[in-house]
Image 1 (tube, rainbow, N blue to C red):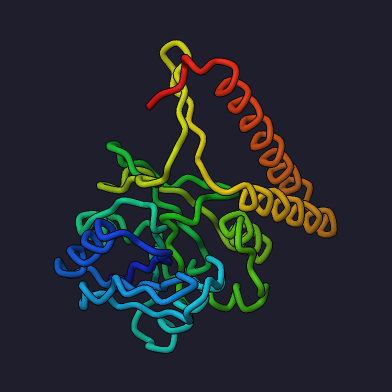
Image 2: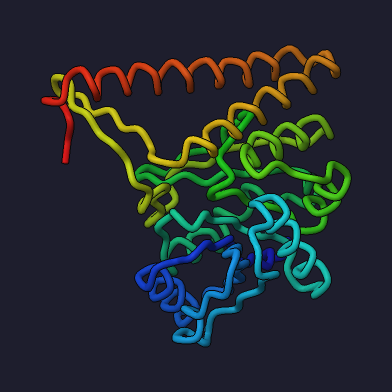
Amino acid sequence: MSTPKVVIILVAYEPDRAMLRNWSEAVSQGVPLRIWDNTPHAFDGWKAFPNLNVDSTGHNMGLGPAIKCLLTKLHAEKHWDTALYFDQDADWSADTYQWVMAKNQVSLWNQEADTHRLVGLRGGKQPGNLIRVRTMFTNGMMLPVGPTLELMNRYDPYFLECVDYQLCYKAKASGWHLFRLDGCPHLFHDAVNPFMEIKIGAKFYRKRIYPRSRNHRFLLNLLALSLETILRFDFVYLWVFLRNVLTHVTYRTWFNAIWHLRPSVRQI
């Protein structure tokens, strides 16, 4: 079995100079990287890093359509068979890519008899085995270029929020297999996301900070996916999506109550 040709893709939105420097350094160390700029106006930060391969339409297309555009370009080149997607918020390095390309790891997810699969990579010190899952984060997801593009074309358009749940559900409904693999080195998800944090006893609790409108879109899209599962009589995924709505609302309500009622537990 030949080693697959893996390229890293990511979707950027007004990245700061530290992000650009890290991506440029990875490219300098031999990492093939393709970037889609979702910034809805002219962003000239790329000029200082000419080794970065960037495409854009000049407006925010949403995460799903941007990934689809990148996969379309990769598929047209007929060179890459696997794309590893990282969110802008993730911290990774050339060592992360080298681990992915290691033959003993690649053989776990690139079986010629089973190309219709999604594999989500997670960071951690201890390497694990492939674990079957129903959903996973988009961040760190291995995407077979051709099959994933066909899947996204079949179910176009994709939500601005909940792309991970939507992609996993569409893949599963089409007979794909979903796996998670832990132990990817130098991979830290949500490394630069702003959080509010509280400490109760010895435990820390965090809530990600993002606009209220984005939170509403997240919940509405999960409810839309729930409606689709009802129409498909897929009650397993109905429970997955509704449970996520319930836990999301419950946790944020609980966190906000503690944040305002007990300021002493806030962390700086």
